[in-house]
Image 1 (tube, one colour):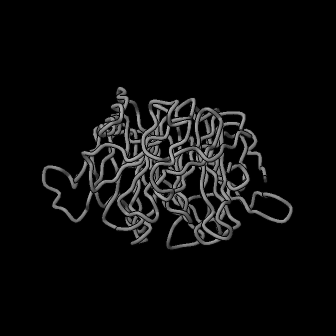
Image 2 (spheres, one colour):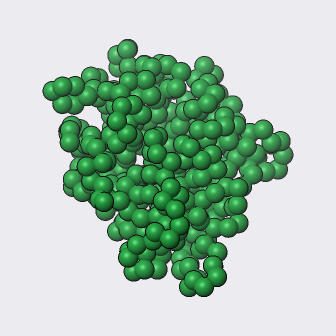
Length: 354
C-alpha cells in the first residue's frame, strides 16, 4: 500500500488519469471544506512511492475533479465558490479557463466519455450544466430543483446523463428528447422505494427518503446504475425497469456512503467509500448465479438480491471521501482519499475474502 500526505488539506476526490497509469489527481480543501483554500494535487506513482509532480492552489474549497478525455494534460475542478476551473498541468499557477454560472457550491464535474467534447457540472443550486471547454457559456442547463451531489454522463451513450440529489431521486436525462416542459428529463426513480415483494419471501423493509450522495454507471451493463448516500446502503437499479425498485440492496456501512465506483474490469464489482472510514468492495450478485445469498443476507433484513461485501480496507482514520479504480494493468488497483489528509493506493484483491 502506497501513501501520500496532503498536509493541511483534507481530500475530497481522487481520479486516475485516463492516459497514464502512474498519474493521479486529488481535489482537496483546507479546514474540511468549511472555509478556506483548496488545492489540486497532481501525483505521480514512482518506484520511490507517490510524489507530488505539481499542485495548484485555489481561493475556495475543491470538492471534485475530472480529467479531460481529449487532452492528457487538462483537468477540471469543482469549487465551493460556484466556479469550475480548467487547468493545464504543463503550465504553472493559473487555470486556462474558468466558468462561474452556478449560484452555489459545485459538488461534481464529469467529462463525457463518449463524445469527449463536453463535460457537465452539478451544484447545490439545483442545476446540472453542460459545457464545451472552448465556450464561455454553458450549452444546456437542466434543473433538478434539489441539491445535486453527483451527476454523470453515461459511459455508453453521449446523450444520456444522470444525477442523484438530496430529494432521494435518481434522474436520467436524454438530450435527444425535445426540451419542452420536462427539460430532457426521461426518468425519475425514487431511490428509497423498497424492492418489489417476491413469492414466498418476506416483504422488503421500507425506509424513509434520505439524501443520495453518489452514483455510478456500470461500465459493462448499459442500463445499470449504482447509488448510495446517507441511509448507508448501496443500491443498484436497472433503468429499463424504473418501477421495479432496486435490483440489489447492499447494507453494511455504518455511516453515510460518500462515493461508489464500478470496476472498469469486472461487471459485478464495485467499490465504496464511507464516513465510517472504510472503503469496501462488493459484488452485486449478477455474476454469481442465483441462490448464493450467505448468512449475512439472513441476518440483515435490508439485504436484497444476491450481492454481498467481499472485503474492506480500514486504514483511513477520518471520513473516506473518494475512491477510484486504475484503468490500466492488473485489475485490482485503486486509490482512496479521506479527511485524514492521506491518499492511499492499494490492491483491492488483497482485502477480498474467499
